Image 1: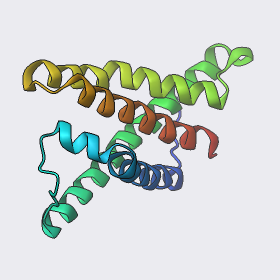
Image 2: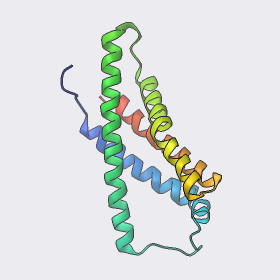
Image 3: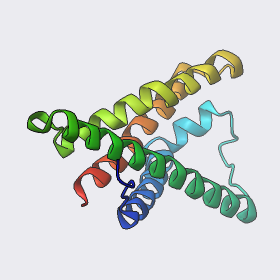
Length: 147
């Protein structure tokens, strides 16, 4: 197999989209419910240094997740084209299956482990699990459609 070719601009856009999506998901969409389930006080606001460090760490983490997802998608597409060119996955199918199986195999088990050992509520598990699946789907769609 030739070298894996990645579109770093698409990866960067997916990271930015993930950041915006996370802001919306844990802000106006589910922020109050999430904070309550995390047992934060209603008036909790992180210190500016903590917020900046958290944003940097989340961005770095998103980059690694999306970078690995891009590798996986390239390999899946390469082998699909090489073994069955007439039925190679279309971008939408590639993106959604990559997102779903990455979520199912890596993210959901971790979230269930947090439920089991850290005692998170099922509501928090649902908020975080759906966020992970949706974030992976957004990223995979960007990667699959941006050639």
